[in-house]
Image (cartoon, rainbow, N blue to C red):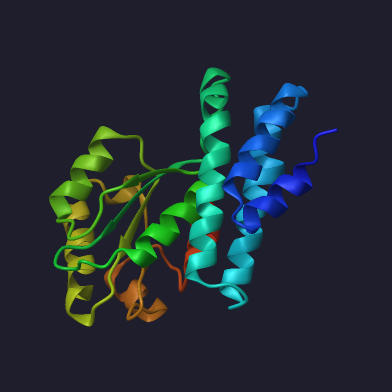
Length: 210
């Protein structure tokens, strides 16, 4: 009998080959891909998110857990597409113009994927136009802006102003994060939410798109 809890545990341990093997075994037994996604992969990833938030695990553990999640997703993704299972939403992520940091942003991307979002990662040093282009080309519910330097924080405000100028501000929710960013700064620049860490960012995105 397929043990979804076991898949979640191997995912948390970062054992990608085992996750792959057990996901395939579960499918062979007739377990629905959506059930594997929701009750094994997302469960494991959100539990590692909680541990990360409580400083019980660190970035390397999250990265290997995310790799194990991806290994499982590779097997079920084509089946989810076939069944037309929609992600809970699409998030465009990027580190703002002038900032070249990406570890935090990448972690957020993994947590969002782990929570069932479709993630479009624009990378680092992203000018407002590039965000705007991505919003226009995709059905986007949420945009995540990251900055790790106090000197690049103003670029967040400029990006939000550019969304307003392009007439896109009302279509999307905007969340911001990064070491120097605070809730009061998020309020000041007109963002919809602020997340102090990657696990919180995934929770916040769920709240914003619901």
